[in-house]
Image 1 (tube, rainbow, N blue to C red):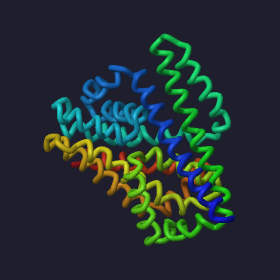
Image 2: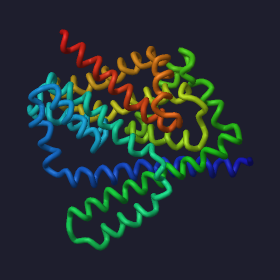
Image 3: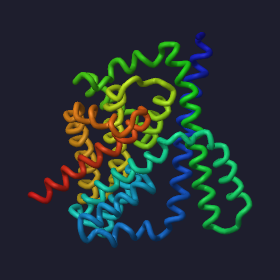
Image 4: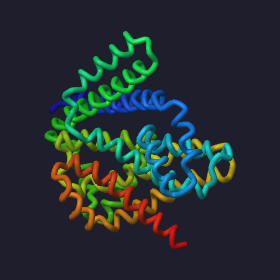
Length: 307
């Protein structure tokens, strides 16, 4: 493989990532438009107890993903609609809801992306009803998202065969303490630049589909790092807000950092349990994303209940 081919494949990989992120933003816009005022009032109405607060946060996380959800939490606290204490179950649910939306993207339906793009475009073009146009926007975003994943997957195979991917993965293998720490750090930095854990997880899906990973140990630290890197969005959103709102953004970061440390220590357990509920590596990535946030959320809630 010559240099021009490598450059083309890297461009293809980055272009696919751009399509994925753009599709995710369009899909989120459609979902938010469909939810309308219901989503804007959801948090203020369902925070009377921890269970309904967690359910509200899960719904918001599913619709807008954890980073944007954290920004909304910061805004609610800054406006005096939520207290820091009441926001904690919502934050936990927000993290979990994001993982559930990524579960949908882990299924092998990318072959139908062009149908989704065509259908969404026609709904946008031909309909005069706002609801139909918003659904069309969401469908168009889903199609672009899967097209981006397909593009990344197509670029990964030749790059792996050329030996350009393995050197990076050799240093981020969760089977060793150093590999786990380095993998978490690099993934957190990359996710912070992307400002989206969903984009990072989607890229991991594409890499797995392309055959870049051989085992769960290679991808586990990268999932944990994505949980930390997405907190950058909430931290930036808290600039210029009151002290309680800033504490909410910091608590989101602290929860994900401590949760990643706990998950890293529990990796031998996850390595045995996750393959039992999904043989394919893409399924294991999606299940890691969900299981880690679910377990960490339960640990925090149980801990708070006994304080």
